[in-house]
Length: 89
Image (cartoon, rainbow, N blue to C red; front, side, top):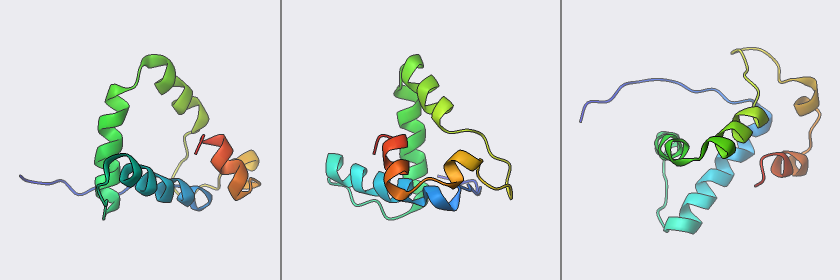
């Protein structure tokens, strides 16, 4: 199957979310995800299955960011534990 090449950026202080996604996918499915691309593709499928309320809540919790711009002040000052709580990890 042909592929397209794209890139995705996340704020550095949210990198823990990617690690938690790897862990959660493995815990639920037993499938050892090996690439960020797999996490991204699994995430897209999960988004399509969310009900409107849950998706809206997730969107509200993840403000848009322009590449190269610093995280908003509130999230810039968050600790690792606060980030986990913020994203319900």
